[in-house]
Length: 194
Ligand code: AMP
Image 1 (cartoon, rainbow, N blue to C red):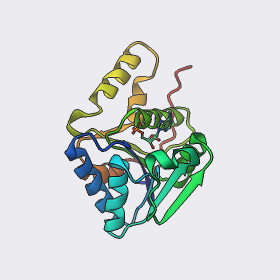
Image 2: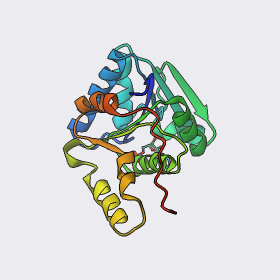
Image 3: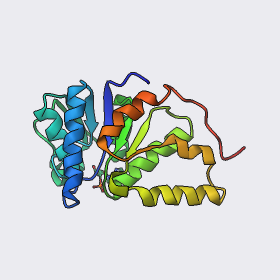
């Protein structure tokens, strides 16, 4: 496994989803703190994002939030983080989050989370990074995404091997065992152009 000292968690800014999603976020926060892994996330204090950050901090862990200035008031920037970086744009936010992280974990979320998942996946498809991407498929939350990717592959728009760029796990407890099994720095990219 690649050495993991910081993990980027992408997840919802809403807290109106299932309580089990908030519980899962809290569990992940505690596991990050226990393992001395810094949480890198979007910097808000609301929703699944806020819950992940609060649980990490409550368990004594380190949390770095990255939030664009214009979003600070909507997502209500967390004021008790180890560090909150305020940036000028969404693009800057995402590249900074990627730069600081050794891997990505995707929890339930909305359209923003979906965009973040696909950006991270497509950057990996292009060989721009080789970091693990763990999709936590709580109670099948992300199954429609998997179905869509399978259909895209079936119709010739992505390579079958590229589904392996994502690692789907069913629960929070499966994240670290999955990371331990992944080879570090997988760099083979199956190009759709060949
Ligand atoms: P959501 O899943 O929609 O609650 O959003 C989760 C996170 O993604 C929040 O921090 C949003 O600010 C962020 N987000 C929303 N739209 C985008 C986008 N187009 N690109 C990147 N991040 C986004």
